[in-house]
Image 1 (spheres, each protein chain N blue to C red):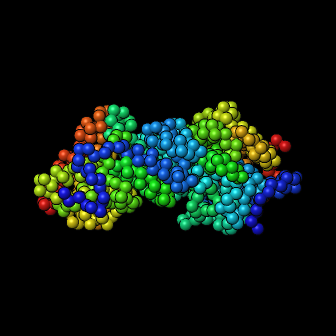
Image 2: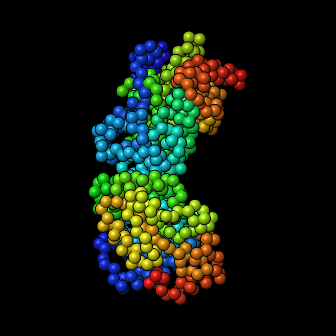
Length: 331
Length: 294
């Protein structure tokens, strides 16, 4: 197996009994550590304490937990006011409401003012499942990534989400962290490298580079395993830092492989796939196939049904990889 | 000389007279700035000249030489389009040279069309998208109360902007958390871009609305500096609720052809006769701009 040792992945990768945790749990764990390490950290919640996993912070630091009710616009702007007064507020809601509903407040008060507001978008992607399209945020990466001064993090598992929270506290300025509802494989470990602006090569390969973010990184690993059995060598790059991108790692991968697939549980337009196309278009154009929602909304269903329906799982990544390689060969 | 206020002095008749004259001077600078810029809002800045003068020259604890002083009072602005009056008053208080006022809205100027926090010290916030400033003032007041800080938070907002839902979210929050260190000041001039507020989207009964949200509500004549200062004193002495001061003002105050005329909400006086007539009126009034209630 050409897994990269430096990535220090879980020994359970590709095992059926790989531990499963929702990435939102990593958010809750990270907040408690951040609260202990830094007295400036506050958590602001819009009526979703349990499902955004802010309950533990509330118990540990009741003075620094603030309940807003269903008020996402003021949630963002009041957070900026707290940041202006020296605090590091995390605002927690579902991604469809924050940053979905309060984009202008985030733009003006967090980004233009360069304030230390950290936006936590929970229940992103179609894997929210039965709640349906209204609650399945798939445009958040696009609308956050376009904002000047904003950092966009899409961690792949619960451990990486915890690290993203701590990295967000250390970073001076606004940060968006996206996470999901369902249990997904915990494929990284405490020792796996993580950083803002860093991508990690998890699996070596030279025929095609698969660049993924969020829990679908694991689907990319499964796809690489399948491709390998078919004689295709796929490089898998975990790219939790959608902005800033790890440009040198991604350009080097494009140069080496000559074909790229991007994978995200979001609109295929303007998200990670868009960012990679912009980067490569300006530096080293190669065929790119984008896995993501194709200009459509989600719907009710089980997470597995929906990931399959919207062609976001390993078999679809395998097909996309083959298409990208074919286009490379036709050039 | 920068105007430093660390302790609040009593308001003598002589001081009041001085503030009224100062407001008159500041109005004239506002008109010159707007005409030079060739765009911007006239009515709001003129209508708020007395209140801004009272704040910077009597009410606020601040030091223009140390704009980031930790214990300064925080003055947020929510209706950023009245920026010229804030800039002019800040220049008169000594934050930056008065000559810079004529760069308003020009390329490379620190005096952006809507004020930008990162460009000019002691602005407290970037302002323009309506409703965002009042929410930010609430955030700062929450932290101030949490830390038992000695500073007070003020926010100036317009009446037209109250139609923005975020305002009422923030009002719920301020009422719930009993932010006694917060004073909202509403420029109740009854006009907005498209006409009269009560035609566009009626706000009355405004007093009762804020009372229902848990505010102490004070209504004053916004051109009576003594009334305004008394209201600020009362708001600081209020220990269990946030305060809102509904300041009844005359849009375009001091320039007769602009007063009460919605069309002057969003445009500057033209060069030449229009500007000269306005300046002459202010000069010859010689500081007699006082409340008509007196």
